[in-house]
Amino acid sequence: MDDVITDLPPPSRFLLEDLNNFTPRPPHLPSPFLVFSSPNSTKIFCPSILIIALSSPSLHFLHHLSPKTLIGTLILPEIPFSGNSTKPSLKDKSCNIYTLNEKADETIMIALVQFSVTSERAHAVSKLLIGGKINPRRVLILDSVERRNFRGKLSSDEAIAFKLVTSSERGNLTAGDSSVVKGLDYYPSGSVVDGLGAALLSRCELKKIKGTLCVSWPDLGVPVMTLVKSLLVKDVLTGVSYSDDGDYEAEYLKLSRRKDRVDSDLYT
Image 1 (cartoon, rainbow, N blue to C red):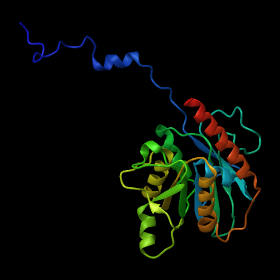
Image 2 (spheres, rainbow, N blue to C red; image 1 turned 180 degrees about the vertical axis):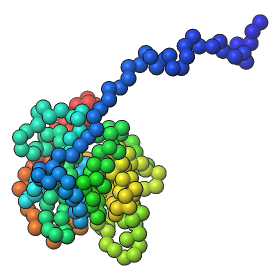
Image 3 (cartoon, rainbow, N blue to C red; image 1 turned 90 degrees about the vertical axis):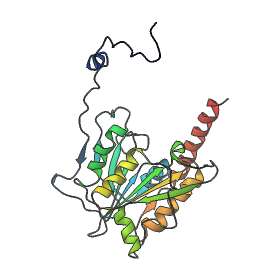
Image 4 (cartoon, rainbow, N blue to C red; image 1 turned 135 degrees about the horizontal axis):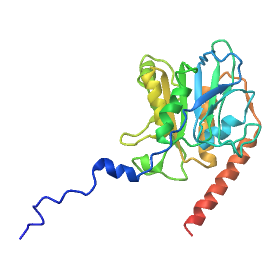
């Protein structure tokens, strides 16, 4: 009698390469690209700092800053233009690029990433925003903490933020240079950052750019908006002449309330 435990299993009726015939190949996606409003398409932008907003509070606050000049857009071919407004809006699925303080040596550029970027496309997008036609001296990435990636407890009532920096940024801090964001603890050991934020910080490391990734929690609510605004106003936008229209607080409060209502309905 055969031993069903130790005997080798019978060979499969299919070869491994034959099994792939039953899985449709994913469609080939065109590469993302940048479109600039400047007629000189060969121009290289070298801002003193590039701020890349991914989190809801940073998007809301920076969208309502003025005066800022729209200079370009990052196009992700799989993101449809249908539903976008003619003027920049927070409801659009877009990635617009602005200059906020256009001076000879102190230009600030802002990229508002208002669509989700899959992990497969994150590195392609990061290459366009950093190191191609945009070569910043410093980069600040504003992202949110994902609960599943955080090692520890997170309270929805407490707004917190952490930072991760590249080796170039850490070397400057060791040499006595000031941090782009002050008073933040480093992201706890064992916690993870993924997605576009991680790809952008990796790009900074690869290009030897002074880069800082600031992650905040939670993604919605007045306390986290106050925290992110404070970091930008006190540390990053010091000495920059700007104003805000005041609507960002009301709009953000409405968004937070709608999100809270949806989440509560899911558990009733």
